[in-house]
Image (cartoon, rainbow, N blue to C red; front, side):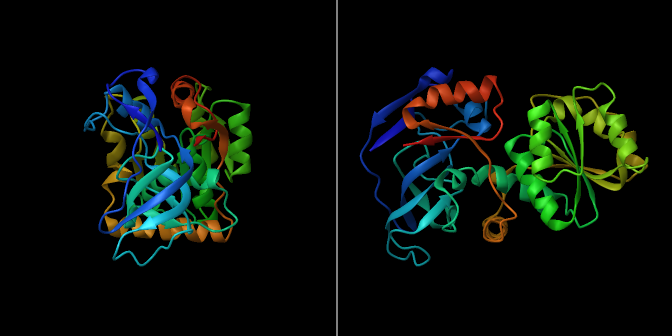
Length: 320
């Protein structure tokens, strides 16, 4: 089979396509024939060597694929060859024509969901659900602020929130992002390019503040987040590019909390809950992943360059 391999950490050009033997499932494992691979920004950090822990070299990047079950090992009873599935993790890496997964990393996919959309589910929708419901315990009638709502996690979070009766205020960076936020259920939209955008957020809540914030870039926004918190508010840090200075007094009067979130820290039980919710959302059409661009597996280098430089709207998907 063909697979992308990383033999040294560095820029996108370290992604090389190679021929490898087909993996074979061991106990409790499932072999998936990959039809589409979703690229996540974290994979660019891992490839560059700036993310810890670092994988052993060489490795095949990625966790999110969609395809069909090709083979199962003894003891696997939830899947059979031919099943349409998406993955939320792999044993051998996702950027490949075939990938080996633990049984808990594979999830059935409704017939009406394309493989490209299935490949956009794993990290983005898991992160959105975990942040909203397993960390912030968001409930109907909460007011939710999503920074960078036009990114893949933000789009997923808007869909989950709309289905649960949560009011979303979205920050975006341009007209395309505004259109996406409108499409995916934001009640209010502000431009984070406006110097007074956090004052706009406060005004939209008539001065009360927001109940939940999904923070994609804490190193830039966290200090300002503390100025718009409603009583009992929860700020969930999903991403950060470095340190930040805050005034803790912003947490004291509202008795608010800052919570960390890493989707890979979810227990198997929490993961089962996440993917049950994703399956329900796909079946009742409240979830609809956005695929921004499809590219060939051999174009993984260009795909990483796009993720790092242009912040594309929608998921970039590789097609083996």
